[in-house]
Length: 238
Image (cartoon, rainbow, N blue to C red; front, top):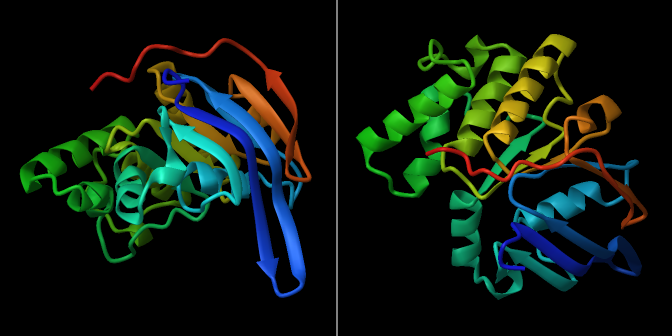
């Protein structure tokens, strides 16, 4: 499984609150190869966001195995888990999560600051990431000076600036109008065409169909694993 980006076996997650126990994941077996764009669909409460949180090392499973690029995530201490989240996983959220008083460039630089990349290098890489999402002329703009679609493009640039092993996107077009949604999907398609590995949660079939596979979740399980097309195998150029 060392050549897989993601491999889970019998992944389970239970939340306990007093006498109440909720099984969010009930034995998820999943593999994601380099260059795949996997869309995850399902009704509210199906477990798709919980699965994404575990894949992003934001939560630990109750039981089961999760290998990220061949490494068992359960063996990570908090310091290594934080480093993996920072350097090997890119996150794109529905709500953008940008710092309101920081410019687009400063927001994209943030993961590189945590990674202790020298100032000139991180600014060069952040500017290049913003250029790749069509915002080369918006480096000094604050989030309040950008449209929703532009803010999400900043979020995508921040997610890819560390050249992560996998990009995790949670409803990345959920807050956008149709024009901005098309722009974000075009960017994700371009990243995928260049070899990026992406796992994306979405409620919209038309968004999911940009993937190579669609996973249909229900009651904490993957009910259907639907293959749409071949994945890209080439790595993203650095």
